[in-house]
Image (cartoon, rainbow, N blue to C red; front, top):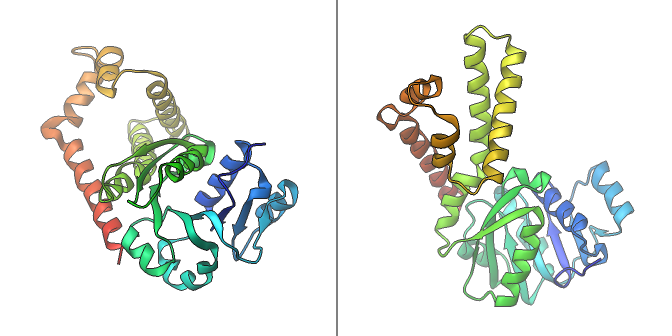
Length: 269
């Protein structure tokens, strides 16, 4: 086992918190270095704590790194109870959508803050996280954040905190857009006469396989599309002529992600 970057406190063990915890444990971090704070632990978390040996809801004490994975709306009420987790040099890694560094530092005794936005494929180790390090975060702390966030997938650092809202709109919320595409493709298949269950299987497998192709290929999506899928005058070209007419899909995606980014900004209040 390898040590965590000092004592590690995970606050919130919902879907994303549990995904991070699972990544740390499977990645070889020592459970003895981890304390998890979850006010309503389910059987899975209780059994995992007993099996792995990490502390569950111990008396709060200063940690080297505090990972905040509660719902953004809970921050105000939870902040007083979280204060004992912070020492003078503790690093806070927040995955709370919309909550700015200024907002977090006003409510918590934390001066060294990394804002991060993972996404749901983190639950299978295939997530991607956008992150921004506040000005007081040291190089060593940034590396610690890289190790911890990298336990569930790739990590990309942005140069401006404002860009975290854009990350939220693109990759944070992005899996839902892909799932909606599967729904729409399956519905279209049923409208064309396929049995609905078959249409759904075809749509799911198509998106699953296409995602894996993107993952394995060094080419851009446009290159894969042009070279490997679309034949001039063929069936795919006929469909793309509709999807790409007046850039309807691009415009709709731009409007959708702009709405998500606005909502992330609104949550900072």
